[in-house]
Image (cartoon, rainbow, N blue to C red; front, side, top):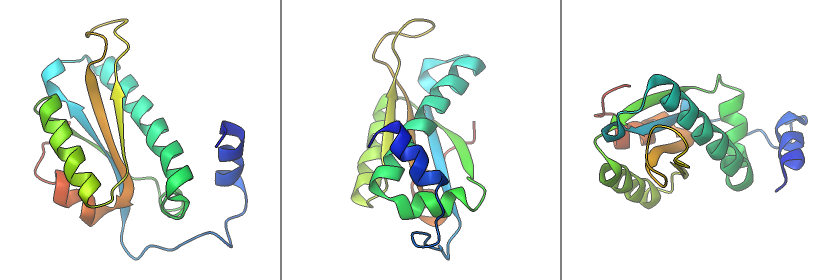
Length: 139
């Protein structure tokens, strides 16, 4: 799906496509704490993850995206120990059919090229995401 099509999809009237979720929805960003990124770097990487996750959700699960967009777009950031920890969270998310998006750094600034910086989960039901990430510390 092209960017213009995606923008049209999320801005067009949603009466026929809107699906109300009885559960609160959110998106979770799991940040690789081992990389010791600065605050600005973390913000940029989480921004990349948010865009990727939103676009992916618009393509694969538009009903969840519509519900999430219409309920305040809740987002949280949590810390993962390292890239291996992030990969294990992603495997578990895939088993529960939760959308995932990974961000790898280009290596232009603070960290080596190809480093796994952030895993975005969702948007999805808060309870499902809390089962995966509820024990992780907030960023």
